[in-house]
Image (spheres, rainbow, N blue to C red):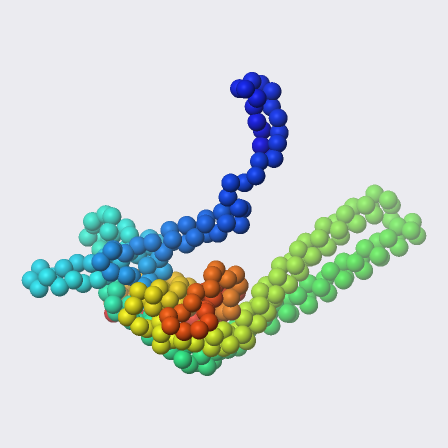
Length: 304
């Protein structure tokens, strides 16, 4: 509802005004703007496959695609550099926020993506190892059992207090104090039980996502050869795959001063399809989507 003034006066009339833009279309446009903002970057002279996915471990700034030319040869060298470094020239920033050769990093990520899609069994084995090595689930189950027993004992104490009051072995005031205290303790135990159950539920979702990872990766593998063509359309599909599988890339230096790159990959079936994109010269389409929040992840470290 909107308020409308008549002839600029003080009288107001409320009336429904149809939206100029369909709400669903508006939300889709806003999502696209946010998507474009996140993955913006790079220069017109080159496509940067990983723009918007690389960040600085030291200061948290996003890395941008940039280039430099050799003083003698004139050859162009392409890099991902910390946004703080590209806006503020400071030797200290240069040491703490190292740049990364773009061709090296992009080839590294694409070879990982290709290996995941061609050999999903290796990914699944690593995911299973992570789940098996983590004994947190057993601890959560034990904690839940302990909390439920404590809650049951509080209920028994409450019933005992009520019997004492009914037999006039304690006064009404004493019963009120005792019951109020037991009520508070029971409420706190229920909150703790709810938190543990939530953690267990999230772990179960992760296991279910792990079980469906193989089928999901197999579906993404279809027409892999077409997305490696040297065309703009194929590049856009490689870009979508990178955005889908790469959770984030962080760049830092190790204790020896070497550039260290941590790449976190996410593996999980689609949660919310963004759009269906037809592949180059093939039938059908891929749905590029956001992965489950609790999708299995794998972090690999590389040095240069």
